Image 1 (cartoon, one colour):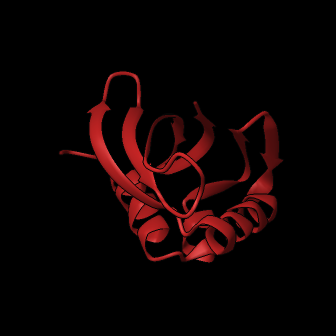
Image 2: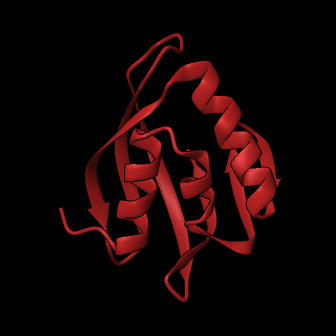
Length: 104
C-alpha cells in the first residue's frame, strides 16, 4: 500500500505505542476528532494518544488508502471491548504533516 510518509510514520508510531512520535506527525495547531471529542494542538494530541495507548494497547493495520481523499481504512485491535474493529481515518495534510484527523 502506498501511504504518504507522514501517515506511514503515524502507523509506525501507533504500532510502537510511541505517543511523542505520533504527536510529531501533526502540525502545532492540528485537530483530532475521535469518539465525539476534539483534541487541539500537538500536546493535547500526545496526551490523548498516550492515555489510549496505556489503556487499550491499540495496534493499527492499514487495509485500504484513498489517496485522492486522504482516507485510510484500518483494522484496529487492542484490549478494548469489540476488538478488532475497522475504522476510517480522514486526514487533512499540510506541508507534509497532519493538520486534521477525523476518526470514524
